[in-house]
Length: 171
Image 1 (cartoon, one colour):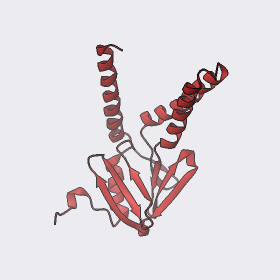
Image 2: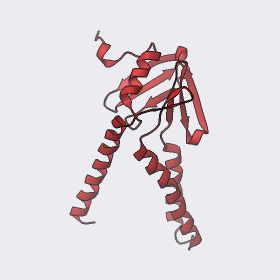
Image 3: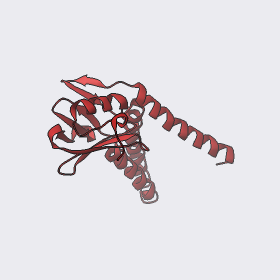
Image 4: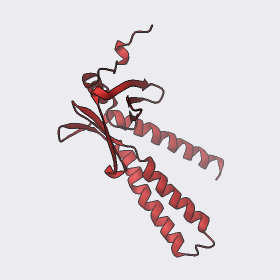
């Protein structure tokens, strides 16, 4: 790849990251069965939703050809398909009793009751908020989830351990 092509690729990647982060602030959470639902932004869902089948299709095409000669390409494509499935961001739902995280198309789901929250902390550099229960399990709302401000508003409404940045006092 020549120098100009490299700069275009880097510029496109930076634009994509900025676009997805901006998209997160603009999208709204949905209301489902009495819960406010915060999925990953649409761009991330499309990326992962199309990436997994594309990697699997590529791996299948390599397997149909000369697998002995191209086994390394098959392994790489299968690895990327698996990684995309495992790393797909969770959907977070909040109601007055608990916060729930659902991953892997609903196969891995757990809840933290507000009474069992041990602590909550913000990571401003990452744009995320992490809720940790007494057993050490955690749920993290990242900058790639929809409506970060609405999430913080609901967190301050339901979770007594969460202190918004505007109300914190330094020791």
